[in-house]
Length: 446
Image 1 (tube, rainbow, N blue to C red):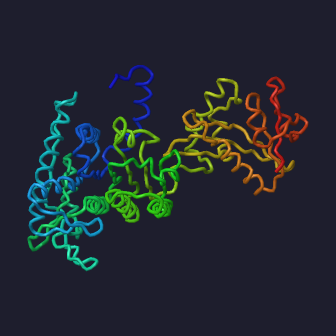
Image 2: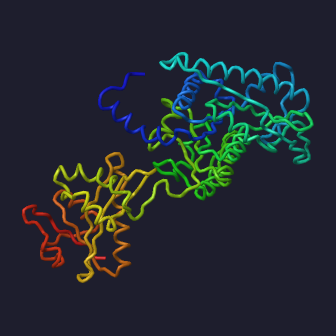
């Protein structure tokens, strides 16, 4: 990849810094299917995972092994048996499962060890550990079929996994479980990842999948933020299954994602494999590149500003003040007027704002200080704030909005304002009107 230099480098570092700080010391469970391990760019993914570990993220990896099992069964002349998307695992199949899991696991461990050796971080060492920490029980008979050694997770030794994570080891889990009676069970990796993330109270559960979540209908509902609340995701999933055919792996991942959110995992990410390092872009940029399901409804929210938003508002309006588009405000003025501001916040960053100052004796309110972050212009965020301002004004029994502007009169006119004059301003506002700016007065009758 070409080197990133100059302003682009500085911008990238500053953009990633809040996330480097935020993710340090956090626990992420990352699951990927066996198909990912057959790709030519698998080493890139594992190098990105190694980088996460070097940045202080505590990582549990859960790998899948379906295509490797298929290859092992074909080599042994054993036919695969599925009921729906669940494998029936008899004793000969279980021997093939063990061979496939063992081989793939050693391959992943070797690649993780090499992922740092081929970089400028070659002096550091990534320590990978595993153990018999997943207890399982048989699925039993479903739809009249005994699934034999196919199992479901019964429990996870969370305390032991936490101990290993505390020593900066990457924990690698295979989709195999053990029973107290000594039996070994074949598990689905999505189920294992869900149970481990839930048991650990992981900060994130991440599924890296073969298909591109951005092409799903759910992604359309998520908008450009790529985020769905749990309630939205549950509604969208039903439509997804009706409108398109998701693979069994994708269905399992989405089902596990929803179950993990319901059980307390705050954020679950579904990430494809296209483009440059999608895992890093999803985790260390504000907009990401995948689909996120959040137990919270406020990843992007429109709300009343608080004193904690002052710095974010200042960063939005300062460039416009320097250009003469907005009247300069001191930080002290902004703090005093913060109750008049509304903001749109995405993942903790103020991306749009406006103020609404009422003049109740005149039955009007001034909408001012409308600003949108440069990265989010063209999304009609200012229109969202205008609708909020109109709702707030009506709730206060006011009959009109007015705005003073030198540069953006066309936007206000396009949104229903009409030209007025300084004589249309409330008497109190006329006292502060600056003729030297020659601001246009625009009126909106509510």
